[in-house]
Length: 307
Image (cartoon, rainbow, N blue to C red; front, side, top):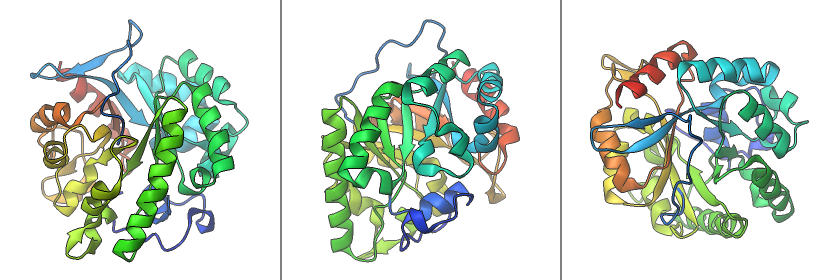
């Protein structure tokens, strides 16, 4: 997700097996500042940094898309053993591809499968196409409710070639947010590097989106990979307090900003990140080391060490 994004083609035209950063970055595809965390299960482990900020340790399911679809309980059980307590799903119906084996499950069934594996799930990614049609969205909201979600996150799609088109897409996202809010959840938008690399009127498109998205119905999920384009999550958390509900966590080698490394060994200032996260409004974090899943265990250990 650190690559430049081109959203000129809708996701239905993209191969389902594409790399997630390419797929979501090319898809035409955050959350209520007033929302409060409901009590977690007693066993749920949280990150507590020096500033007293608590977050459950989560991971993005796309990192293990093949395994988690073929052997869901075994895969989630292993991640729970690393110390992860929440999983952010990708909508099987919207993503398809490697997630096709999970399409057969209702939201209620997928929730049970997740809980039986030792994890909770409160957030899920949905593609632009499946949430921009009102009939499809109604069905997706029902699915999300069964799954027990708090957050329905749009996986991308606001980028455009003109300012007016970005504004139009933000209006569509606001409509999505209103419907999700009426369904008892919060809508979010997930960025990629393209929202920062792609400039309109000499400004990052991400800044334009923040101007035209209604913060009362749409919040943001920040992709920390934007640091490789020169933009830090914590700067945005402080500039736009209360506009963010979650983040995808990545870290990169100091001498190679394309190489993912265990959190704490790279270029991200995590102490400052978590201090600013309180201001930004974060409720959840999801580790997503897509290019090197082997370091996911080390990332969980790092997050646990912050407590």
